[in-house]
Length: 322
Length: 56
Image (cartoon, rainbow over all chains, first blue to last red; front, side, top):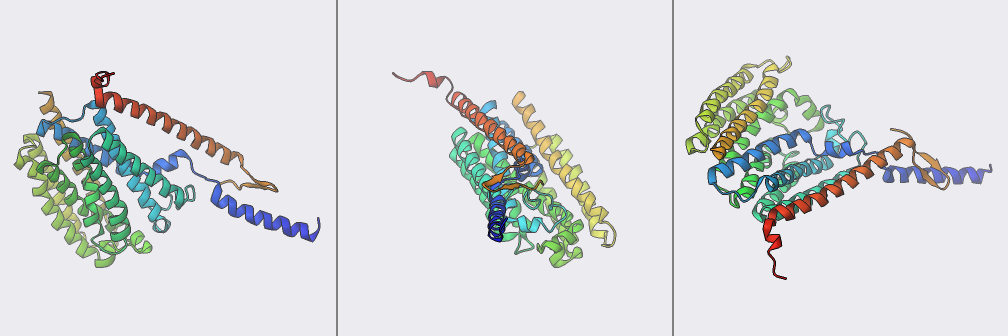
């Protein structure tokens, strides 16, 4: 082979290598599913289901039947998943730096950023359009707003620039039951707003507990989570304040009458448990240890929200059945 | 991740690449079938018996 041939071949290989980088996808279907953050989607589906059933039980208006209701729920889940994909598209650089997220499809190299963006936008458009067709355009607009709020307001504007990121951004995670309420009734009442408020007030102590024991990860990625910017002691105090404020908000379905006695008693007991865990976190001054109290509060907060919404669901189903 | 084989006339997919491509194709096909079923169900359940009550 002559020198010219070798040069030509080397050039061809370089060009082909560039083409390979851009053209051959390493993605499997499960990677696209992972882009939708299935863990977050579970919470979205569950809270939206409670919104749907509570709306039917409380208002007596049922614009959706079981099949159209299930389709609406699927749309809300897909919309939540689309937000997750858009979040991963934008945060690929940060995800690479954190242990917790380094194996996500984009930083692990299985899905390209372009693929994630296209997938997220397609799923967002599909979910909003189908929800509009199957229920009403108020619900579809609220879902579109939720996706916009999570992907743009939280991910792009807030997360990298303020330690209050998850306080304001928490609104996106709190909207699914409101979307579901609108889908079922065609309007948004005070009850839907209360469901929103419960998740909204629950989000800061939940995420700050996580941020306490993952603060090194966040610091490495340069994300201004509260423990990174204002320190552990300040964060522990904020967790306690929000936990105390959460209790009356969580009790408000009972005060307003759309949560029954079972809900009132369960929420009172679980809220005391929440505050007790927050006090343990507040007292746990030793950052050298593994932040055991913060981990316990994080786990408890997930159980807390599932239990509250689970009881609301149970009571609403009983009300409809009777 | 397997290294793609670079042939002189372009890129030849490795066995793993082909497997992944097949999986993606099957997923897209299932997705399309699902959408067809979804729109069919939506039409039937959204309009119900009204579908049959149209003047010809």
